[in-house]
Amino acid sequence: MEEKNIVAFNALERLKEGNKIYINSMKSIGDTSPDKRLYTSKNGQHPFAVIVSCSDSRVIPESIFSAGIGDLFVIRVAGNVIDEVQLGSIEYAIEHLCCKLIVVLGHTGCGAVGAALQENSGYVKHITDEIKHAIGDEKDMVEASILNVKHSVSKIKEHLNIEKDLLVTGALYHTESGVVDFDDKL
Image 1 (cartoon, rainbow, N blue to C red):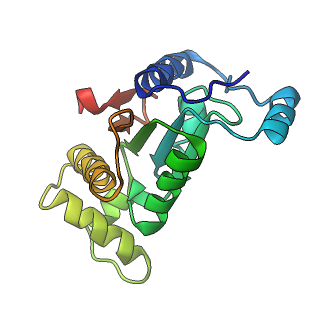
Image 2: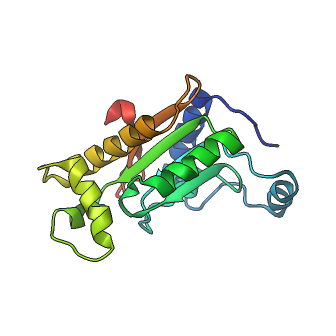
């Protein structure tokens, strides 16, 4: 029922195909059936990819990639920023769940990126300071989102032991169309 140890390239192709299905669908088509719930309950999870995504309520990785229960290991945090907690979650997915693909998924119209262009205080400042570091003086929201994604990809590669069979890539979700551009198009 589930593929274990799927290679990174095949996992990436699966995400791309799932996004093509999502763009034209009227409802989520990932497998959330009682059989799938029972199977994963008994046999554990075997996600084929890790998705580090923004917490934005318009960005739903399982829907965007037409995935169901047990397919994706999703880490959501405002601005898809990376710190020790996210690194630990990614490391867990690599070491314990055998994920071979890590995708940092940014999006257009990101409120956290927009907030980074303003002054902030409180706990949100931890997020916006990280984004400011990533985007520098960039003021264009789409370009800033892309720079933020690339920064998070770099942090993952810098801090985790990324072996040859692992792929870390960035992607940008276009909230208006549903299309995902992967690293090769950013």
